[in-house]
Length: 299
View (cartoon, rainbow, N blue to C red):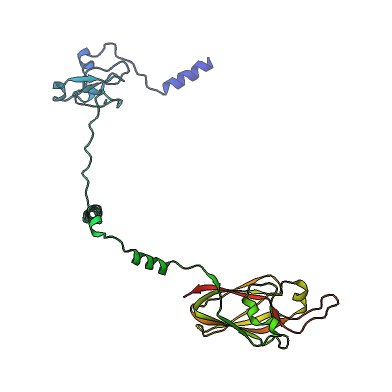
């Protein structure tokens, strides 16, 4: 048939290969190559111990790998085929490297040791020699030191005398400013109080810290009189004047002062608040001030 002819043409392209009828010498075919072990395992792969057997290996006891069953020399820790551990003995641990200290580290250690030694000696001296070195305290010296370091509280200072530029009558003298009586006051006899002054004198030097101004507390009298607005303060231990300004109020007004040692306090009026009528009552033309309190420390 035509199909068979095509197969015959296809077969003619290849050379026929026939096995010999007589098998080769068995002794020749079964002989392994020189330098190799004889046999293979069931997988067809030669065992590792058979692939690398040397004269020295033949005299060493073999160890069977628990994972793959390969034979290994007894001195192996891991299997040459699969790499598994051959025994459960702990692996040797390399000794820790000896610490190496540099010259700077050694110097720092010596310095720290010296500081610790000095601190220890000082502590021992304080413990055992403190009672001998410290003598009984002098109460006079202690009290004087305390009085010089602790600031004294400010108290109300009482001037030895008070003078003014003018006063309306004997009922309105400047001494009324320091008598502590709210029913008395000082009235200036000048033109609306501008340029009026008050001077307070002290028998001993004082350090003034505060001045409290008190306008007339009675609302009707407060409105009808002129009141201090601007002022200048002078003390004889300072070379400058201290200006200030009060509010138009009949509440006490405190003014801080930085005097250290003075015999005199002078207050001069620079401006005033205008007087006003109270109902049908007409305003006055005088300046009125009910009281002044001076606080500080006597030297």
